Length: 344
Image 1 (cartoon, one colour):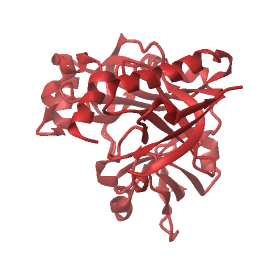
Image 2 (cartoon, rainbow, N blue to C red):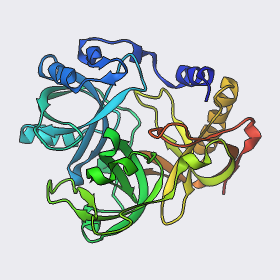
Image 3 (tube, rainbow, N blue to C red):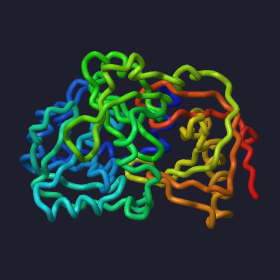
Image 4 (cartoon, rainbow, N blue to C red):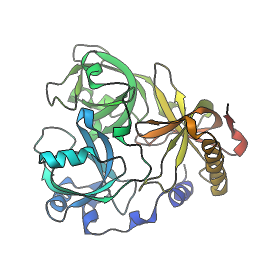
C-alpha cells in the first residue's frame, strides 16, 4: 500500500478529532515513535487519561483499554483495566467496546508484559452507539473449555512486547498466553489472523482471566498452520458470510467484510475496499449496506461484530496484509463487479 493510498484511507475512515489533543489525551506520552509507559502513568496519576474500551468479557474478568497517540492514529498500546473497589468493578462490567472513558490511577505491580491499571476513578466520556454489548451475547466457548483441554487450533488476536504478549482466539473466546523467553522470537513473527495450533499448560495465576503457557514438554508447542502474510499481493477469490463492524470513535462509518472459513472452525474476517478510488469505495459500502438493510431479520451479534446469515458474499481482489498488527486482511478490488452477493 502506497503512502498516497494510506492517506486516502485515513481521510475516509478516521475522524478528525484524533488530531486534537488535550491534557487528558496525554500527548506527551508519545515520543520519538514510541509510547512512554512512565509518562502515561504520570498522566493517569494526575488529571487522568482518556482511554478507549477495547474489550469487555465479564465472565472471564477480562477488561482491556487502549491508549492511542492523539497525533498518530496508528500508534497505540493496550492495557488491562482493574477496578479498585466493588462499585468500580461493577461499573467496568457495564462498559462496551469503543466507549471512551476517563481513567485515573496507577499501574498494578503485576509481573506481566502488559501493563495493568489499578483505577482509582473512572468516568464515562462517550458511549459507543453501535457496538455489540457483552451482556447481549452468549459465548460459544467458555473458560472451562480451556481448562479441560491441552491444545486447540485458533487464530492470533494480537502480538505485543517483542513476542512476550500473545493473545489467541479459541472460537469466540479470547485467551491470553504468557510467552516464556524461549518462544518469544517465534511468537514475534506471528501476525494477527494467523491460524495456529498451540499445546499448552494452564498458568497457575491469575485464575481469572485464564492464562496459558506453551507446554515446555511438547515439541510443537506453537505451530503455524497458515500465515496470512504469505498471501499478500496475490489475486484471491474468497467467499464468506457478510459481516459488519459498526462505526465507532475509530471509524466514522460501518465497515463491511466477509467471514472466511479457514478450516478447523477458524473464521477470519476480510475487509473489502479500494485504496486509490474513493468513489469506488463509497459504492462498495453502499452495495453492502443495501443488501444488509434488506435482511435485518437474519442479523446476529457475534462478540465484536454483527453477522448476516442470509448474505453470502464472493469477492475477487488482491490480498493485502502488510502489517502484523493490521486489524484484518483486506481484499482490494478494482470494480464493483468484483463483489457478488447471494441472497435468499
